[in-house]
Picture (cartoon, rainbow, N blue to C red):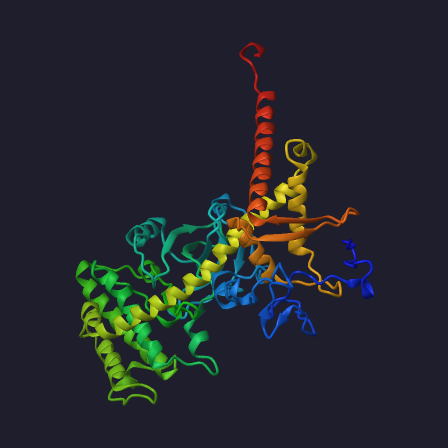
Length: 482
């Protein structure tokens, strides 16, 4: 009989050490220095030699969301503690968690130099959503003006717009300072245009600028068709998320707050200025010069790498003779290409999210397994010891992996495939080797283990409910006791 601790079989040469029934995937964290798969011949699996075949070779990268997408969706927790924190004692800001400084101190705005601003990141305490706060320092804006701007713009939503979710004046954020706080949705993984396209070795190609144009023209039209100008379109108020290929406008409401719109007759002039601002940003991106002047464009030939049609687009926008609807019609072919690109990218992102969805399903299964195995002693009298013993052996089969030399082996693919088979209740059988002195070898199917897990976990839930009901009865007071 085999020794379950050492894996040696008495009477066999060198102890006849038993081979592990699982083999590591090529991309597992554990990388063996030599080929261990002695049961494979010419790359094929010998079912006669190994009645319990190894799990399929599974690269770890196929089990989890790609790092680029993950980093774009989340802010690493290791980054946040290194940022300075603004401590606000007023209960008016209790709806926020810790407020981190994205900028060390207030500084003049690039777009409106007379106004000093500072940007912060925080999270909503009750929803967990990430929030960006823009603080306008010591501005003469009344609360009524904040309410008017918020009510006028709060309903606008667009794929290329960072919505304005709150706006209020306060003297309690920083004591002694009369500020305006603008609240926006925080976009993780985004870069400003200067960082994305104006640093060493970076530039925007014509193809990317056509995509930028289609996205921003669509945003302008969503405002202009309601006769509301966007206002504040400036390179410093646009961010770029490379993973999604998406541009966002982040300055909604800022210009409206600092420079009221005036009469209704001026709306068409302001909408024309939106189109001209778009053309100027395109000119800056194409020339890779943030200090370029509009006058420099007159009679200028296309720069190397850009077509005549793109240069005509910039000219049309700078002249302001076309409105957003006319630009949409002119960009029809480019719009269709942009839709195809975005749909293809959406499929990629959906596939990435699908991996995490399956990982969430497996996490739920592992939590059930942990409850079944680690439940308190009072639960044991309601459950079968044999069932919990089989589940305990399966848990060891998952994680107590060793190779033929009894070295620790970490094979993610083995755990992943075994948990999936347990979740669906596969009819496939596995051998579970006990670690007790009885030299136990249990042959059981995943379907049986699935039924055992459901039974034990249901009993754990029932015992928990019974305990909760008893606690409620103990603290219930009868009318006569008052």
